[in-house]
Length: 141
Image (cartoon, rainbow, N blue to C red; front, side, top):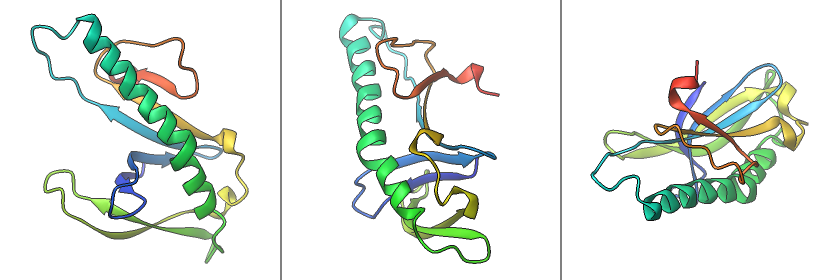
């Protein structure tokens, strides 16, 4: 994994917790922490967790993936494509304009090779949502 806490612009249209890549794919990860309380297993809270997953799924397909594909159309320089964004410090919440680069081989990447990962501290999978990969944090190596 390469980059943390990226946004497309300062007004926070969407946020990418982690962006990484390997030889063939680009990975966009959403990380959800869990704060235990006495009623965390109630049905309404499970619904809220599912809603968070649906929200990420929607953001991923409607905003994040198109933004990344558009950025990958930039002209490569020295074998890399530079994409402009905004990066926020996780601790202070302050951010600055930021550029990151991806290898030129991703210039014509198939949208199927941009993969959404939803990583959570609860070992809870919603089988009816298949558009992103749902992972339990202990299963991530």
